[in-house]
Length: 439
Ligand code: SF4
Figure 1 (tube, rainbow, N blue to C red):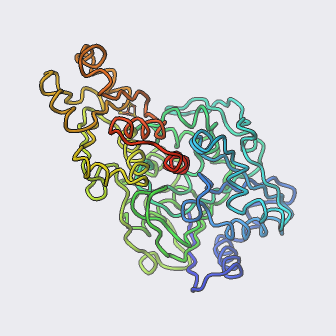
Figure 2: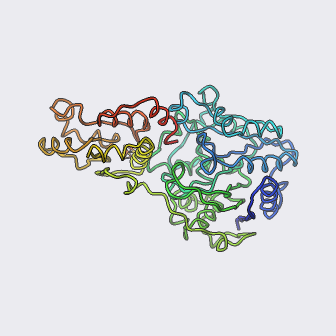
Figure 3: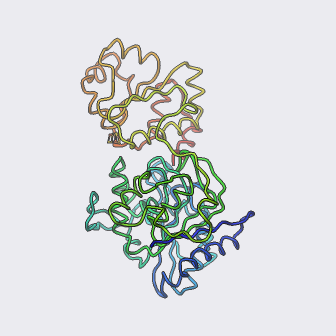
């Protein structure tokens, strides 16, 4: 039976209590010596998606506690990560190394004498094409060299909700960064993201002896970036990443994670771990005593805060819906919703296969007077061809923004296009803000 241990810290939380909590959960699983051996290279894989403090990223005090305990066994801990490709593109070439510096990880690693290895250096992600036996979807992928060379890999995510992750981003999702940020991380970033994560998990699972979860401050709402912090004071460890994710999900309010959360359900049903909480042994704190119902993430465009936005869907997947929402968060942070109200304009998104795009010129003309029309994503741009003459040649040319991509990742450019269409200047202030959202 797979096992998950939970420890709840008493406030105020400090480094010494965190160290003890990490030791306590690992001891409940049999002690760290059971999982790592002297001389082994142990890759600690935290979440440093962007240079934002916890709970967007893993608390470095938890990483420090784990690294020190691995070191005590005689094994060699290495902290490795590859931040989001968006971080590199939108932040003037910011690398994972820069993110680690900004988060204070580099100083911490130096202090305790632990090596820090970013998967990418100077924008080049060091990876090797690797076959994934028995994969359902992603039969080969460019995998970080460090992950291939490490003897053990320890996922160390934050307890967060996720718009794209099927409800929660935890031990399985944090492995996503083992794929090359500029190629395989971006491919299959639609509804197929979940199976892709499971195929990646299938490849590295034999190297994962246990995983640890930073649940000191969780995130509810539109995680993994735009949610709200929730104080939890928890540390979790489990000897099965699927079970650890399932118990983490149960703590934040999912009753049946092996049915409710895509990646957990797929891993569970494909025999890669136990996702049914009734079949998992929980040690330490009881789930019922530490659980707190989080506000869940949603890909829907909800008012408030997204006033004056209408999304017309065809056959859409989560990819475009999540990225429309990332774009709207970016625009919100530059005050666009106040501008839309003042100008009495709306944003009309058409997305997915065959969205209900007006074919009547008069109707389209009227809509364009009311705001900005966006045809969002490859599905949509490829299936509004019946309106091609309007979009490309007619009097509305230039008034309708076509945004290709699957999903369209370049939110900064899209935000600038929308501001231009509304007659709003994009000054250095907005450009600076665009670098830091949505990731
Ligand atoms: S274009 Fe958008 S809706 Fe279509 S498959 Fe890609 S992400 Fe999904």
